[in-house]
Amino acid sequence: MTKYVIRGGKPLHGIIDISGAKNAAVAMIPAALLVDGVCRIENIPQISDATLLLRILEQHGASVNTVNKNTMDIDCSDVSRIGAAFDLMRQIRASYYLVGAMLGRFGRAEVSMPGGCDLGVRPIDQHIKGFSAMGAEVEIRNGIIYASVASGRLHGAEIYLDVVSVGATINIMLAAVLADGMTIIENAAREPHIVDVANFLNSMGADVRGAGTNVIKIRGVDKLEGGFYSIIPDQIEAGTYLAAVTAAGGEVLIRNIIPKHLECITAKLVEMGVSIEDYDDSILIKRNKPLLKANIKTMPYPGFPTDMHPQVAVGLCLARGISVITEGIWDNRYRYVDELRRMGAKIQVDGKIAVIEGVPGLTGAPVRACDLRAGAALVIAGLCAEGLTEVEEVYHIERGYENFVAKLQGVGADIVSVAVSESPVSSAIAI
Image (cartoon, rainbow, N blue to C red):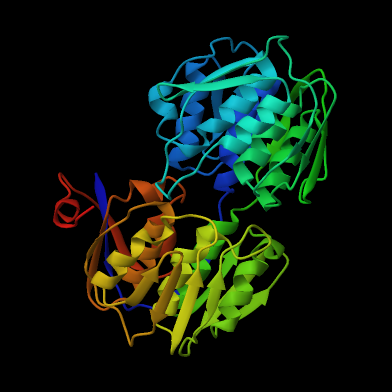
């Protein structure tokens, strides 16, 4: 186990390069199952979620060859084993994309119920609704999802999602690319990584249209062939570093981004009093004056992303006045609040609403990362706090951020990763 040790109070200055999008990578790797041939995927972030999915493919018989640290050649031509790697699948939320990919390619799937961060009830009913409409029979027994198509091939269908779901949109899209006929997904999610997954599939020979809108049409094809594709930059990673500069102060150039994808985040940061300058593939952020209060409501894209709520909340803890956050997506997103209170934050939570009263400063404390984005928020809090902060259970953070410590060190943060034999913070905090 490791922990991060942070000595706060230092503004950030320098350059940060953004890695490939986690949420695109964890869908494209399972999507490689649909490809009859070698697909080269570039800009894969070095994160534990991607590593787990690559290991799962290998256990199913895929050939995975490393071209360089962020580029993989994946050949699923000879994949034949369907039920395997359950112990790995249950560690990661994105394992449910294997259901759509396996159904599309083999007409059947056996996949462990997904794991990942505990953000409350995250049902897969919309996924199942889509698979069922396309002719699959799906049941869940003993924590395993069993899905099969009697005819061996899914058929096109019109599917209306009852709620906007990123996971269901992508999973149905994966299942539909090799289905017989046209599939239409209405009320589809519109996140940038959905567009990226659609572009990946199309580069391999699929016919997916409308990604990025609320209606996606997929005309099934007989075969996907090999090719190469580079993953887009990670919107949330970039937003996290923007939030870090907002809270800690300083001036940082964030490169290898798509500024359009960040507008839903940068607009709120500007409201809080930071300076943002957009360039073709970079953003310069400056913060050298007191922060202002702001209200946030998380919504599906292009609204403010739920995955950025904890990180921006740290800056609001230091802002003048009272801010209100309304969480519109997940039930358990506020689990980080108790940890910030240990550092001196004044936050009151009622259901999905948090009221934050700004304080002059935070103080270092031992804290625990309870999920991926909460962990990133606690690191940001440590960067701007007075004294020493120790963040434990950082494996959550390493699920989604490549070289997190090194990138922060590169802009002047006093942060190190330290090996620990046990977790004293975990035993001291009621969970």
